[in-house]
Amino acid sequence: MFGRVQRFRSDLSRPQRWYAALCGNLSPSAETFRVQLDRCLTGLSPSKVLDAGCGKGTFSFYLAQRFPSAQVVGVDLCPDLHALGSNIDVCREMQERSGILNTRFEKLDLHELDAAGEYDLVVSIHVLEHIPDNEDVIRRLARALAPGGHLHIQMPRNGEHASGHHLCEELAAWSHDEHVGREYEPEELSAVLESFGLETVVCKTDGGWLQGWAWRIGESLRFRRRLVRLAIVLPFLKLMIWIGGRSIDDGTGNTVVLARKPRSLSRGEPEADGSGVAASASGFDRSARVSQPR
Ligand SMILES: C[S@@+](CC[C@H](N)C(=O)[O-])C[C@H]1O[C@@H](n2cnc3c(N)ncnc32)[C@H](O)[C@@H]1O
View (spheres, rainbow, N blue to C red):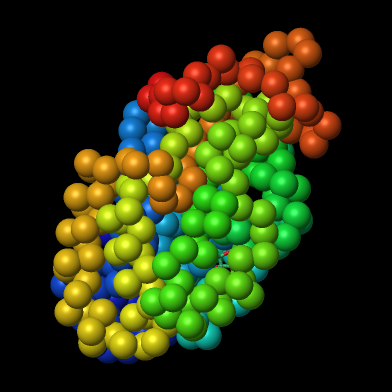
């Protein structure tokens, strides 16, 4: 079950670890992100994966279990959003205690990522909105792909997180202080990726208002440390996410993009060196919003 590995997190209380062992991930938002990630991963079998901005390793461990023969590298700047301990230290301890050994964790500022052609899958889940000048980081992520490799990005759409913040002042203040990077509409993000030589495979929003409200309610309770209430409503939030993720895409929600580096660049196509100008290398039809991973 997704997120049960959190039972090995030393920074959580014992009841939280029990909850994770029984019910999986403690964060309803992570469940939303996993549904979107899963859809994009259909048909892929990467051997080297980068989780760029891995936080407490939620998706690094998930990817390591989903692709047991792959090597998963999680990198993060380290500070912890909820002041519960250094991200990378917690990840390394979880790795040891869980025995999920096809993972490696490093402290790294993504502005310093220098990994040309190393990875056949790069994921970045709700990270770019935390990074000023994130176009430089997007270029580095694109450059880190091996030919034929895929880049999966999830992040808030323009202004999406600002809505519904009246629920919780702490969440509003956090979002104001932390979301310092540019937020993109799906089409804007895919245009940036294409300017770095990638082809768009999926370009969409995630599961609509139902998932959006599940996120707001869950995060508000988390920020107010109403953890008992969160535990009680979590199954309902997960149900909202499950329904929203499968049946509703009303154009609201977060940006979700999957892009691929072509196996070989034909003459004239832009390289991921920051010099490119948006040009549709893929022939992707944005009016369709979603195409399937090949
Ligand atoms: C909202 S958390 C998401 C964590 C993880 N991707 C997840 O979904 O559980 C954002 C993460 O981005 C990391 N981060 C922010 N700026 C960064 C940078 N310049 N380089 C690397 N990581 C960064 C933060 O430390 C934090 O762990």
